[in-house]
Image (cartoon, rainbow, N blue to C red; front, side, top):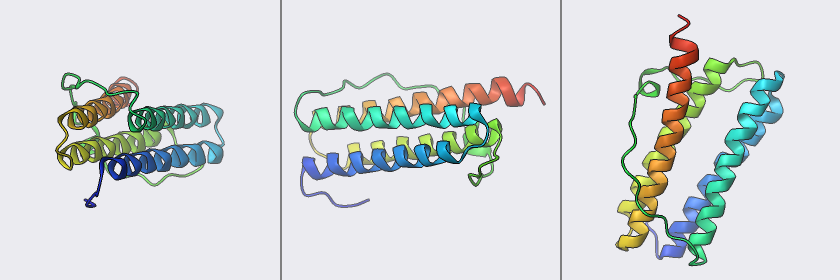
Length: 151
């Protein structure tokens, strides 16, 4: 983990990661030949852009998020093989990519919470981590419902 000189550095780092996630999902959406898959990735991109906006408000001093309760983790994504994005990927492959990205985002926010001594900022980053955990859970539930139950 990078050493941060200030809270601003920490928030800038987090916003950069959200921008990267937004760009990744936007790029994936543009590559999708199947309209329903394009929409899935466009939705993912919008969520990441929303995270960046929330972080920007925190940076401006306008918003601090309370810590949310811990979110259930089905751990489905933890046991799936990595998938490489491709224009013709199916829904299962898209869900696997999304689960793994959300797990990485959860870890990032927990690491950022540990990187600051400010209790309010720690709580905020922990809340962001729980939001990422909710996204991962949503994808795991979707995977369980549409992939595991069909096999």
